[in-house]
Image (cartoon, rainbow, N blue to C red; front, side, top):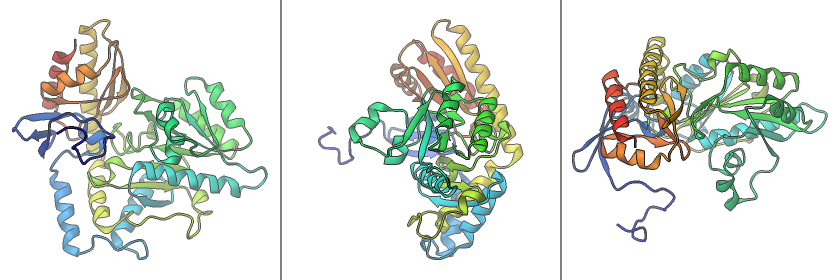
Length: 391
């Protein structure tokens, strides 16, 4: 089918392969060929394909007859899910939406209203980091460091400043500006080569934002909910943010996002300030609670860390065997970037031909995010296919 015949809008460039079935870490195409899926739907399918946990939760939800009731009414399912997220985060309130981009949009609104409620000089500017990716809507794109993606759609949301996370003085200067309302940070920058920010960096940001009455928003859409080996990726730093954006694995493959808020921010939000038609519906909340019940288990997270260590070790050996080709390895848990001295597009294509699915994180970085249920045997196999795909 040519592009002119394809009814799907041409904003993606997928390969010709068409998938018809999934099983655990495997995706199967129309010809019956099986592929190891080390993309997991870009970090969505935490429990793999065809998860019995997800299937049983969907069946349970359907038995109630409640798929959607809108947010004009309460349901026990969304209340239970909100309770789980507040208890795990130490924050106080939750707003459910439908995607990561929407969670960022809402968090920016909430942070601005809170900052304006403080009194004194009006605070409205948002600080984002170079290398950031927060989504493709007007607000989330405005805080995304992709000039080539922003340019065709300008003017976007005004009042955004970018600071370099490798230069603390640059971040300090941005947070000193008297009109700064919030800073938004990915604990692991996923779209710029999988770059974890250090605990020391996050601790310093938290210190400055508290001292200067600036909201700290953590975007954990891709790196959170078990992906980094802890329930939230920021946990090793010991800090507590004001707002957390989460999505991708939350709905077990169904579209769902959430903003988790501190009491001080939530206290300034009033009826009518924000809303959504589908967010937190009873069916998807049932599935999300089942997924988090698995992902949030300490023994499961320990397995993620153990398997992440296995993957990291194999990637390190691969780098040692290919001097000059692999220039860096970065990541945590089951979220890794392999930086090459050559463009990665041909490597991704050869890996797919060999039965391994991976995605880029920039022109020179391979991004690996298998399901959190991946086995060590599958990790071993993926490493062998990847080595064969390298030039």
